[in-house]
Length: 165
Image 1 (cartoon, rainbow, N blue to C red):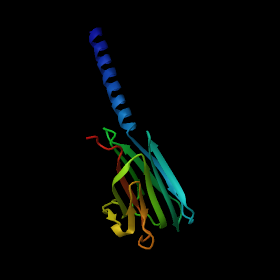
Image 2 (image 1 turned 45 degrees about the horizontal axis):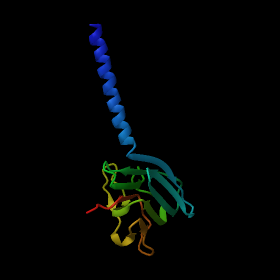
Image 3 (image 1 turned 60 degrees about the vertical axis):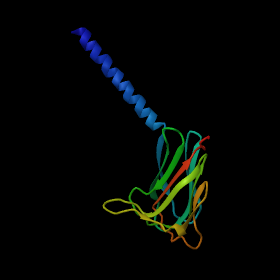
Image 4 (image 1 turned 90 degrees about the vertical axis):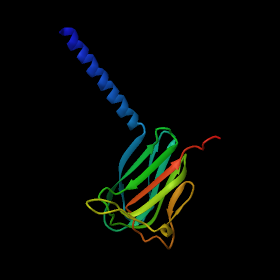
């Protein structure tokens, strides 16, 4: 009986180690950080880095008080895709953005989207019109004269390396 109890303890310990290793592997591939978006018209920036990849959100906005936002960066299991999302968890931002830019380092953008409203509490995502922002190989930026100053979420996905033939 003592041998069985000892065996059960070893199995439980082994399972715990497997779960902890899996959790660490996920943690090494994603990171989510809280930050305050501060009005006042001054250009501000917030960055997150994961391994050798980096995402920077630069903005200026007016009105109201600080809003809590989040930035999440992630790396695919094969290390070929790097993602960066910046959003206001409460949904719609009430700040008046005069400019924004999301820039990634170490990857070439393959997909980008910007939203004036996020899906929260029965609401749905409301995408900015494509004419409101510009996507390049490394950044997503507001388009001067076309951007309507509403921003609640940005998503960028980039390829980290080219496939060899």
